[in-house]
Structures are given as structure tokens and as C-alpha cells.
Length: 280
Image (tube, rainbow, N blue to C red; front, side, top):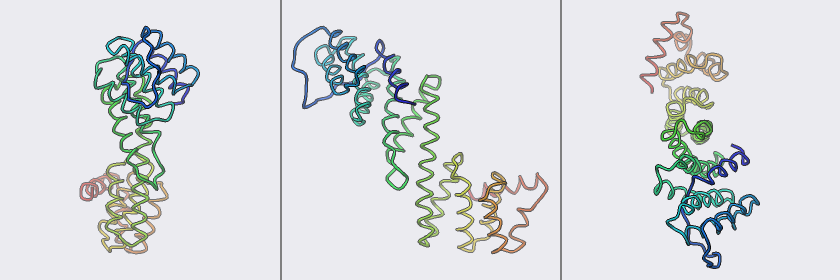
């Protein structure tokens, strides 16, 4: 979701939302004023993209008027400003405190979504640790589970697909590394995980082909043929299936591909089911 849209969502919370204040080395000089005035000053700072000053004003609302309705509204706006300023950990902590204190609030879906977005925007490439990807996945799933009909559910679904693809990509990267190093069993574990846990991602066909390669390397031809059957049934026109077929024809002879050449649809389906149940 683009930043401009996300900003408009935050603006919509002006009458409904909240999050938690934090201890900061820098604070506004204490001058007791009406909560509404402080809040509106923070809101004005948001409009000017002065995130740091906005945070100070919103936090000052809670500091001076902790039990007011304005404090509830300021809490989540402070979290949003932290997100915009790139202070993701502070934004997650604040939004998390908001949902703990106000789980029934009309702004709770936004708070959960904000947590997911903060983790999502910290996802790194597959060559690095994917801890944030897992955190993003868990947080976005919370949005879907708790608020499936909310305005944030659709974007959460799209981002969940991206996180799953990222996690699958990580397993594929590690699996290919093990395969190159000759650690075939470790590679099989990674490829199997992709085939079973990330079936809907673009990495699934390659994972099945790499399993075929690994089983052939170990000389376990029956398992190689069964994996190829799963690959051919689900992705019959893919280059990965063609590669697996050629590999089996070369290494296993005509008997290795006989079941793959079966033309009867029902027999092919039954072989696929048996292969899947046995292997996965």
C-alpha cells in the first residue's frame, strides 16, 4: 500500500484511535494546556511530515492527560508517526500497547495492520536472516484472523503472499547451497519444506525438481519418480517437469518414466495421490 494511502488511513483515525507513549531523552517543555490543543498541534505536524515533533506532541497529550479521550486518540497517531520516521521498533511497541489496552477499539484493525507493515518493510533479501519476514507473516495473519472483513484484510493477503514467497526463496537458496556442497540430505529437507509449506509460491515447481535431482543423486529412483509424478501432475507444462523427465529418462531407463507416460487420466491421478501421500 502506497505511503499516500497509508497516510490517509492514519488521518481517518483522528476521531477514533490511540497508542502508547514512550520515555524519550527529548521532551517538550512541560506547559499544561488543554489536550485538544496539544493533539491538534501534533496533527498539524503530521501534515507537514515533521514526524519527530508530531511524536512529541502526541506523547505529551498522554503525559498531561493520560485518562482523556484525546490521549487514546494520540496513542496510535504517535505510533503512526514513528512508523513514518522509520522508527519501526517504537511503532511496533506503541501499536502493540494500544491493542493490549484497547482490544475492542474501532482502530484495533489499523493497529494490528501497522505492526505487520512495520515488520514487512524491514524484510531483507533472501541471502540474509528472515526473522522479520516471519514476524511480518505472523502479524499480517493476525489481521486476517481477527478482522477478515476490515479495510486492511485485502492488502494483508497480498503481503502474506509476498512473505511466503520470500520464505520459500530463502529455503531454496539454502537448499541449492547444500546441493552444490554435496550435502544432499540437508538439501532434501529444505526442498521438501518448500514443497509442503509453500505450495502456492512460484518456488514450488523448482523445489520438486530439485528433489528429483537429489533422490537421483542418492540412487533412490522410486522416490525420484514419485516426486516427478507430483511435479508433472501439478505443473505439466513447466520447464522443471521437462528437466525432471529428461533426467529420469537418462538415469533410470524406460521403466523410470513409464508411470509418467500413463495416458489414462484416472490412473495418473491415482499415481499422483499415492506419490504425494507417501512422500509428503
